[in-house]
Length: 87
Image 1 (cartoon, rainbow, N blue to C red):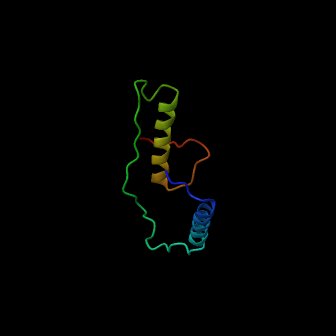
Image 2 (image 1 turned 90 degrees about the horizontal axis):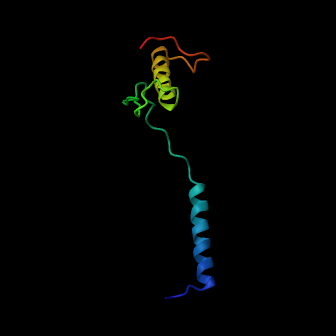
Image 3 (image 1 turned 60 degrees about the vertical axis):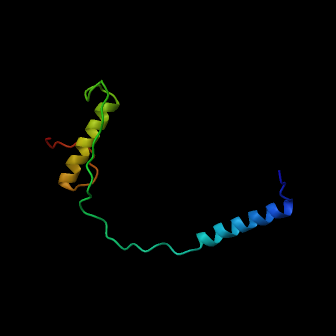
């Protein structure tokens, strides 16, 4: 097995540090595409055998999905109280 000398290791480390520093100095990419109003994805959740009324993770994720659906319809920011929309 070949052993790398300390000089070679330090040179490689300096090259790596220099490359990282020069990369960090680059300009940020320009934003070319506007953000989509209607993203093409559907929110969904998966339940285990407890169902959606188990007073645990399944129920809270189901309520969160319903809240997101209501906010999407009304286009309002995060409500301070639970939404009253109907599914």
